[in-house]
Image (cartoon, rainbow, N blue to C red):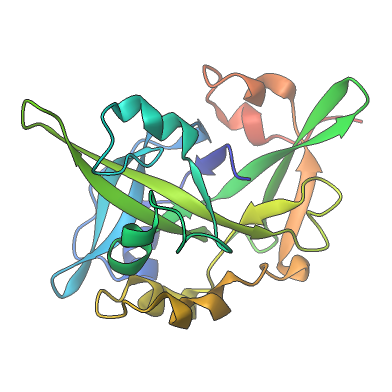
Length: 222
């Protein structure tokens, strides 16, 4: 799964990578946790737009938005089958920009957080889906989930799942609103190449969402 990630990407870099006309100021986060707000990129009319949404997808038919806390991830293998996700995968796809993500190694009764990122420092683009939920009073809540796939060789010893990380040349396909047949998306669900990623242990500070500073991604001393 993907349960924590970091967002620390300068506006000008976001604009260049995703072809954005405007980039609002977004506060960096070194510990994005479920139910928090984070930026996503989606296609609006004829251009890409960066918008803040809440992590944890709430389907339009949900009676209680708290349901979103249980749906932070969607398995790529079954995303078209689940009632909560099958509309979004066709019509409401997005990309979740990130600098890296965390996963935990379990050893006996202890667990060590690992920070996973691109070796060259480039941002990551997670394949995401989003939905719009309307409350009885008419207010609107936009939420998203991150797709996951089987782990690559680097991550498999840490966890058996990883986010679907898109290559930059795959961004236009994923965001294309006119592509509504999920079968055409399946080639994008392959695990991201291991040789492009790196992982190292970090402090258990990241275990608490209250801790949100660059210290979270500092390599732990051994």
